[in-house]
Length: 120
Image 1 (cartoon, rainbow, N blue to C red):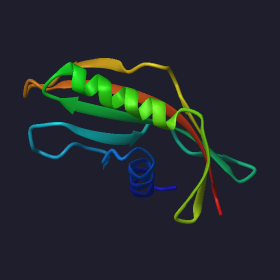
Image 2 (image 1 turned 90 degrees about the horizontal axis):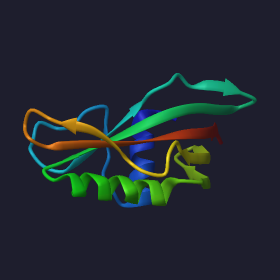
Image 3 (image 1 turned 180 degrees about the vertical axis):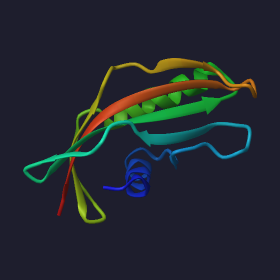
Image 4 (image 1 turned 60 degrees about the horizontal axis):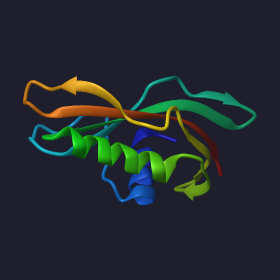
């Protein structure tokens, strides 16, 4: 599954818009997704990790969005989307990670997941 379809699937499952690879140039609350490992295929199942970063002007906003993502995606199974199947989505940890503060003054948090997918 490519990064564009991953972003669309996560938006469908969570109601949270996710940008691929980078934030836009605007100030404000946004999320972005990066694939952080290579996609290893074994027996038709692709195993890889993703990281979702959230930026906002207050840390509680970032933390809340990350917790919402974790709550909606952790242990999600058997989702068919655009010719692919999400076999399993597993949160790496049950809480978001504080990354720091951007030059713009916005705060940055992230959450990471292990995904198993298959082509239909």
